[in-house]
Amino acid sequence: MPRFFYAEKIIYAHIINRTTRVYCEEVMRLIVKNALVSTTLALSDFLGFIISPYLAILFLSVVLNNYQEVVPPRDIESWLGLHWLLGFCCVAWYSVRLRHYFYRKTFWFELKEILRTLAIFAVIEIAVMAFTTWSFSRYLLVISWMLILVLVPLFRMVAKKLLNMSGLWMRDTWIIGNGNNAYEAYKAITSEHNLGLRIVGFVEVSKPMVSQKTVFGVPIIHASADWLNTIDKKNQFIVAVESTESEERNMWLRNFMIKGYRYVSVIPTLRGMPLDSTDMSFIFSHEVMIFRVQQNLAKWSSRLSKRLFDIVGSLSIIIVLSPLLIYISRKVKKDGGPSIYGHERIGKGGKPFKCLKFRSMVINSKEVLDQLLNNDLEAKEEWDKTFKLKNDPRITKIGHFLRRTSLDELPQLFNVLKGEMSLVGPRPIITAELERYNDEVDYYLLSKPGMTGLWQVSGRSDVDYETRVYLDAWYVKNWSMWNDIAILFKTIGVVLKKDGAY
View 1 (cartoon, rainbow, N blue to C red):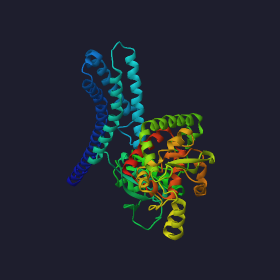
View 2 (view 1 turned 135 degrees about the horizontal axis):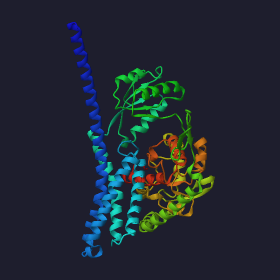
View 3 (view 1 turned 30 degrees about the horizontal axis):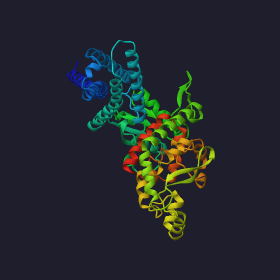
View 4 (view 1 turned 180 degrees about the vertical axis):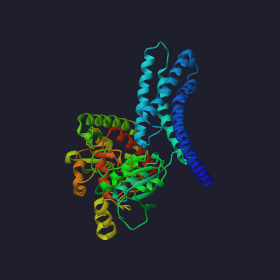
């Protein structure tokens, strides 16, 4: 064999070995990174689960001097052993069944699965203890599980925060598409930090639709599917093309599958359908997806559960806040007018009702408003656009405080108790606003107005009217009890920060 052929063979072998080594190193780095992420999340969950009973024991040992007489030490050891076993099983469930340590889910969706799983394991623990002869304290059990329900989600959130800061949870993401669907995808993804997706670029799949090179500060590139050969497979790819680009979408998906890309998602152009209760299935040997959609509030069981939630919630809040209600009522009455007034709003099915509020305006508010709108064109334009004024001269001194803190809406608890309103629902509107809802008015009329809602936790008065209508319709289409709970928790944060209140 000539010497130069031998040298060429050595060079090729060296190149192949080097390429193989680089590839293996890259694979190992990915395996180590994924293992580190999943281990960190699993340990955070296990830690939150395990330390809770010890904290409960510590708390009761401080409160009760003779604590060991209530629960013998031997039984505590047995109970803690059971708790450790349940902790391992819980983490295994999160990992194997729910895929929490591998898949990326939105914060509220993941939290729902976390709490639901913990509730199931709480029932399992109670059932096991019911069939034993152990002596145990109900206080210990309740406090322990209350801590678990708080600490497990809290530790998970902190763990993801640390992983995000270290870059381990972050994943570079490319959006395939450069139309309205892609832009909506960008807004949705960047609003959900729990996903850990960092948008690095938009990819045009057909001829350039716009002339700019960036959008939202993110570069736009024009590339064919061959471009994939230059991109790391660890990246996330989101196909969000327009409905008119179905051929391009199919071509990209085909290339993703053939070349073995793992992290690929599709955001279709479907709009207007309920999402929360939608199930997807397919027909064997056919490329046909079937979406089963339903409107949850159309079910009597959903309406009953929402009504019971409203009754229990409003009555409990009224009892707890009754001293505050009496105090505010007396303060408002000092200027000689009534403390509470009712303004007509449109309820479920178009039925009008008196929406109660603490009076936050002067007694002759109508005359003051008419005079302002007649003399101030800018104020009139603002009023015609949003039915609100940022610098409203009708509002009293205490009224400003009540509105900033949303305390003026507390009397609506009685509307909720009467069944005219709900704790959570669309924003109560007047008759004149119905026409501004256009086709979405039917969704508004399907539900009772709420004391709080999706609009109130999305910017309140700083949100334009078109977005308000969209948010009200989205809430009704996607109602669930969990969404109501999420909105109530978000409301607490909004009220404390006083976002968009005036």
